[in-house]
Structures are given as C-alpha cells and as structure tokens.
Image (cartoon, rainbow, N blue to C red; front, side, top):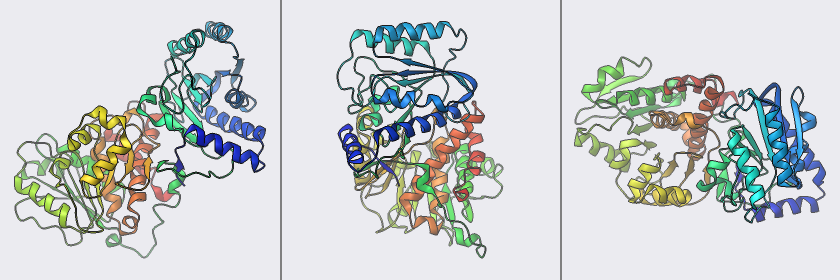
Amino acid sequence: MPVPVLTVTRMREWEKASWEAGRKEREVIAEVGRLLARRILDLTAPGADILILAGKGHNGDDARLAEPHLRDRKVTVQRVTDPAPGLAGFEQWCRERPGRAAPARCLIAGANLPVLVIDGLFGIGLNRPLDDAWIRLLRAINESRLPVLSVDVPSGLNGETGQAEGEALRADLTITLGAPKAGLIRPSAWEYVNRLEVLPEIGLIPCPFDSELCWTLPEDFAGFPPRRRAATHKGTYGHVVIFAGSPGYHGAAVLAARAAARARPGLVTVVTLQVTYVPIASQLQSAMVHVWEPGFQLPNAATALVFGPGLAAPDIPEGFRDQLRDFWVDQPMPMVADASGLDWLPAGTFKRDAIRVITPHPGEAARLLGSAVADIQSDRPAAVRQLSRRFGGCLVVLKGHQTLIGSAGGAQYLNSSGNPGLAQGGSGDLLAGLLGGLLAQPALAGEPVRAVRHGVWWHGAAADRLAGSLPHWTLEDLPGALRSLDGEAN
C-alpha cells in the first residue's frame, strides 16, 4: 500500500498510539538501527570509513544503533550534545583521513562509497532557528563535500515547513522513518533532502491516518502486471499506436516505440510524416511504421494511442493536429498526450469513462495553465488538480523530481524512483511510449492509475539501476534497462 505523507503532529500521534498499544520504543529504535545499517552496507565498500554523528535525542539513538550491524566497516560514533566540541571532533576526523573526503555521488545501491557521514543530529522536533555554533557545525559538514546520509530529516531542516532553520545539512540521501514528513516533499526542502527513501515498517502499529498525498513504494506493484497465461496471443495484449516524429525530432519516435515495446503489448505501430518515415523505420524492427496522410484510419485492433513525442517541427499539417484532437474527444481507447501534443489538446470533456493521460513537465504545465513555473513548483498538488479539471478530469503525470500522479479529485501519488540522470532529452518521450504500451493491454487498462504509477516508477527504477552500474549512461541505454525490471518478475 502507498504510504501517506504525514505532518509532524500526525507522526507524533502515530508513535503515541503505538506505545499505548504496547509497542516498545526501545525495540522500534533498535529495528531502525538494524534497517539503517542494511542500507548503509548497500551503499559503502568493505573497509569504508563511516562517521555517525549522534545527537542527544532519539534521532541520535536511531543512528547510533546502526553501528553494531556495520560489519567490515571502520565506524566512528561521535556523540554530539554541544556544537563546539562536535565541530572540533568532526574536523579532527577529517584530518585523520586525507584523501577520503571524495565528492558525493548518487547514493543508490552499488555506490561503493569509501566514506560516508551518517547524520543523526536532529530529528523531526526541530522548529526554531539554530544558534551560530550549530550553524557553524552544519556548514562545515556541507563544505567538506563528504557524502551524507540523513536519518529521518536532514539536520537543521524543519520537517513541517521544509525550511532550513538558519542552516541545514545538504544530504545526498535522506532515509525517513515510518512515513514521509510533509516538509520533506516541499520544493524548498529538495536541496537538503536530495534523494528520499522511506522505511515504512519500523515496528509501529499500522498507520491510523490517511492522506490525499501518498508515497509510492516498490511493493505497491507486487504481482503487477499479472503473470501471462500460456493460452494467449498477441491480440490478448493490445496494440498501441504512437503518433510521433517530425523533421529534426525523429529520435523521439524511436525512443517512444522502443519503450512501448518493453511494456510488451501485442503490437506497436508508429505513425509519422512522409519526411521522417525512413529515419524512423530504419531504426525499428518489431514496430510497424506508417505514413500519416489525410483521412488516415486507425488500425482496427488499436487499443491505445500516444501522441506528441518529436512533433515539435513548425510545419506539422493542421489536419494531423485536428485528427488527434478528434481522437482525444471521441475515441473510447486510452490515450497519452505528451510534449508538443499537449498544446493541441481541447479543453473540456472527452468520451465518458475513457482513460486520458497527460505528461507535462513544469514548464509545459505552466504554459497550459497560463502561469509561471515557480507557481507550479510552489504547489504541485494544486497544479495537478487544475490541469486535470482543465482537460476533462484526465490523469496527470507532473514530471520532475518526485513526479506527481493524480487527477481532479482523490489521492495523488509521489513517485519514489529516478535520479538526475533522467534530465536528458528523450526521457519524456520514452516515458510516454512506456505508458502507452502498458495501457494498450486490456488487463492493465482496467487499473489505469496503478498502470500509470507502475510505468512512472519502472522508468525511474531503470534509471536507478543504470546509475549504479553505468554512471555516464544515456537515454539510448534506458530501454534495455527496462527489460531487467519487468513487473512480471515480481
């Protein structure tokens, strides 16, 4: 189940309810220490130098109790109750390890770091500005450029507001406990939180609270997509038709088609202009490629449409655009609109009960709503609601850090996978094709929100795998990584 995003007050109430139900605080802290250690071992190389900065509260206890489980690592636990000696101890530790203070890299499995700082100085209780001595300590840690893993909340960050209280640690990875705190998912907190992971099962009772804003876990897709039965054929798995590619942008059509094929619908067809037919068709094997011309007829077996990737050239025929607008309004099958295709969408309703998905990045969202990017980013959940209402209640995938998925009402889902390597041209084209390939399959289109959430998570998880094994990967590598993360392996 997705994890609700909670306020600090709600998190406190959850903990209190757990103690009243008989759960033992010391046992929960011990379990957190064990789980943190397992993640630290994933991130570091044998013999790595690990410094645990443990404050005087339970956040410090969480970090400190990881130490007994950190086999084959050189662990130093520094109890920090006063910032001045804490700063002196940190600087001494750094001086004793010249050359170990390597610049941080993306903290995902396989990072093989030789050095790591564990931040357990402050927890969720910090709600006032820090004094100068604490600011000097946090600033020294930031300036060291050491990789930092923060426990629950980066020290100095207000877990409720997402604002730094004078100074906050710029973590490379934040592992939050139980559920994401509301402040951690605010854009103002992103530079401090960086990559966010959640430890949902730490020994508390089941969460007694719901939230409209939820955090996606890989476990949400256990058994999805369902296993395929033997007595099936390509017609069982649908036919996605992708309208894509124009002069100068033919590669987008190729990426979208290759990603769609990784979702394994029965058939993939690309429809493009005459001028881009040869460069697209020459790069695809299993996908069919057709030239659009006035009066184009969809294949009889089509079960989903994607349009937008690579349609940025200025001379797209108006008849091409008009036909796609008509499809959006009238076709009963699922449709995904991306990139330039978003500007062609008619406002208002579409065929009742049809599945419609739009995939804007913040710049496109701002253009569609006539606002500024800063306005979109300042309240992404509200932007998703507005976009969905403008386009008939469609499902919105608002891309970017912690991609957000939702519609005009109901729950919204923050995606937990992905890394800055996805900030490459073609990433969105690939995602659009992947979503179309999933929604083309009748068995998956019956759960459209789950299918879209799975596609977004799968796209990011493939990028994470590449970052762990091939730091300088490009978008051409991503479709192949999708193969090894097929949901059927669950």
